[in-house]
Amino acid sequence: MTTAEPSAQSEEFDLGRLLAARGAERYELHARHLNHQLPRMLHTIGFDKIYERAEGAHFWDADGNDYLDMLAGFGVMGLGRHHPVVRKALHDVLDASLADLTRFDCQPLPGLLAERLLTHSPHLDRVFFGNSGTEAVETALKFARYATGKPRVLYCSHAFHGLTTGSLSVNGESGFRDGFAPLLPDTAVPLGDLDTLAKELRKGDVAGLIVEPIQGKGVHEAPPGYLLAAQELLHRHKALLIADEVQTGLGRTGDFYAYQHEDGVEPDLVCVAKALSGGYVPVGATLGKDWIFKKVYSSMDRVLVHSASFGSNAQAMAAGLAVLSVMENEEIVANARAMGERLRSRLSALVDKYELLSEVRGRGLMIGIEFGRPRSLKLRSRWTMLQAARKGLFAQMVVVPLLQRHRILTQVSGDHLEVIKLIPPLIIGERDVDRFVDAFTEVMDDAHHGGGLMWDFGKTLVKQAVANR
Ligand SMILES: Cc1ncc(COP(=O)(O)O)c(C=O)c1O
Image 1 (cartoon, helix red, strand yellow):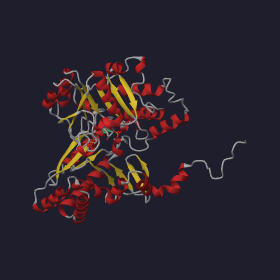
Image 2: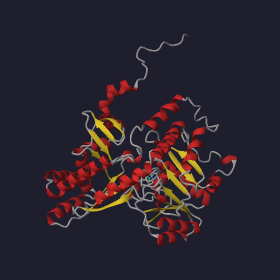
Image 3: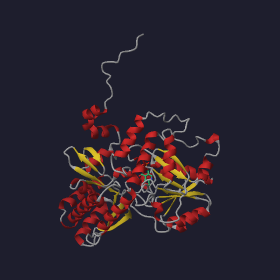
Image 4: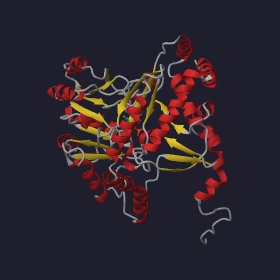
């Protein structure tokens, strides 16, 4: 038999041609084959846009309108989109045709990235590379249990650490957990409550406490002194402090890691992901002390006891090295601190002006804007109508005109929360900050003084919330 001729139909795969031919079907395809609620939700709030191109902190639609990104792909785009240095590193690593993922050799890039990453947490010694934030957390949970020989991990109320089964067990919101039980036997303690922590530790079965130094849901910061005091308590009971820096790490809060805001905090394990690869390639990293890794990988027999097929892949490692280099060369952490300060102080100045605005909080470029019950009668009755239907609708009412009228993408910081969270790319400049504050001021003016249209939209949201019950 002769070798088969390629059939007339089989054509070389061409990504550009495929996108040109079928890109317009994106919402329809998603509705048919993926999570159908996403396009449904996007249609409902008018977020069903077609973005054509992106660079830095902006993207553009087909008509050439520019949008300001205050969400950074849930924090993965720390350097904004398509940073030239990260992009070049990815082209280079593909062109290098490395013998990657043989699995039975030691590649140079993982060691180089670990070495460079560890310079930012000098008290830690080793790194496990996985592929996502939740995997970084799963690794920490397993390592803490194995290293201490104890089963229970404590977490904070309202915490978010990912959505696979282990990380879901340390999730502080019932909305995520309901229907997925039984989970791991882990226990919530209120963020900042040392007495409850001490009480749980006295039971003697606690492997560690996992904590976000600033919680992503609601943007709540651990109170001053809490992390250090918790660390001392944990160590006294031979339990570990696990800092989840998946969202707060890599400069987001104006320090390289948010736990570094206070002296003396030295978590035993640190979880990193999101921005580490510049948003291009999934990546996760769990950093830890030498003794913990030595215990988990205690013999040659145990060499693969915790591993991941794609862990340490060359693309993720190259992107990670490029990101860390850009962070240093372009002083990204300092920019996050300076722009965060400008954004927070300009927004804080509005709190006295608008009665629906109750607080602006956060650090660096992780800022929460909380809305609350107004004093005046007219606004209060509108507010009460929204609250009766569902908490979080007012924040949604603000997010929608920010996109529709001002072309700024933001998000409500969690289900049933009247908080908007701002986590823009860390490279934003003063013009972006001012554009956001001016737009937000207009939306607040509208909600307080005019805003028939805005409150009409609120009524639509109320109807939907009631219909969804
Ligand atoms: C603090 C924190 N931990 C873990 C995760 C999970 O990361 P991933 O979505 O990459 O699994 C997130 C995601 O938002 C997060 O914010």
